[in-house]
Amino acid sequence: MEEKNKFAVLLCAEDSEYVKKVYGGYLKVFMDLLEEEGEVWDVYRVSKGEFPADDVVQIYDGFVVTGSCSDAHGDDAWINNLVAFLKRLHELRKKVLGICFGHQVLSRALGGKSGRAINGWDIGVTCIHPSPSLNTLLVPPHFPVIQCHRDEVLELPSFVEVLARSEKTGIEMFRCGDHIMGIQGHPEYTKDILLHLVDRLLQHNLILKCHAEAVKASLDAREPDRHAWERLCRGFLKGRLSPGFQEELA
Picture 1 (cartoon, rainbow, N blue to C red):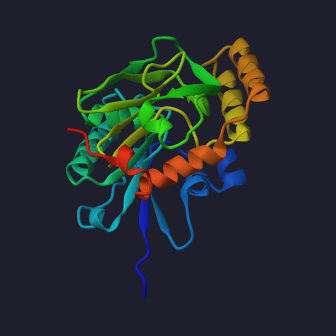
Picture 2 (picture 1 turned 45 degrees about the vertical axis):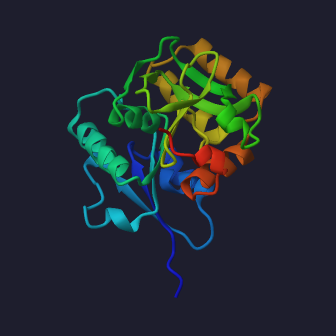
């Protein structure tokens, strides 16, 4: 019997009642973006201290680190444990894809730095500008993605390559060798998920009404390129990107 590829989602946030009811939880949201036939996908709720055991890590072909309401530069015990776990995955050269908080905490594990975004909240559909490494993969020159963050990666070590920037954020994407990639945006989000999240942020006075109005305007103005993000993220996790992109950094 052919062995199935196995992947693990490291869930860094609680499922909202809305996402559970409509989408079946964030694991299903990520599987909708990344899953292909015949694969096995597991979830570890790392924000609750649930991590893969040492003898289980090797069975996985790749890991996905999700977004979170917490700060990647925070000192919570589970965040420190996650940083240590990601350092181990880096040493093992396991495939790791980090999204939003996951992007930021991955940078920390590699020796970089994250913190409050210099230009404040970025919420809505943002066009990012790919580097030549990404252009070889035929991604659009203005690559739209859904965003929802007020933190960002501020610094990266010299052995890490920046893959994309935007008008508000200097490090929208990065890679380390052929096994780690961080994405500040949310390729897994639908517009519906973002609108629900914006309503929650507004109710908790974390954003202003003008922010919410700007988000809705950006969603009307452009579409996130779901197909291109799906191809890129699946290709990275499953080793199908071009040889030039996967060339190991010195």
